Length: 72
Image (cartoon, rainbow, N blue to C red; front, side, top):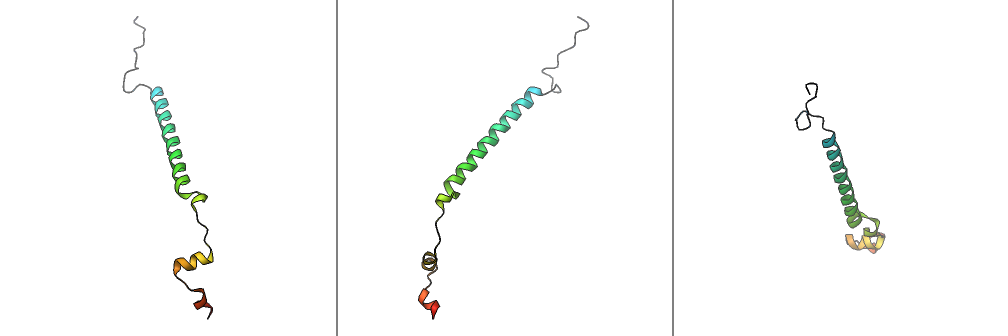
């Protein structure tokens, strides 16, 4: 037993293969969750279904312009 190599599994300087795998998994889950959240915000507030069509009469009414006054 004199040739046995001591275990370094619990030592702070031990290779962190399992820790890296856990960290990678957490980062992937976080990035996927952020992507889903960003898509939800886009779908709720910025998607084409939330855009209104701007026409000349709507713009005139919004800006309180009188089309007859401009023609004179």
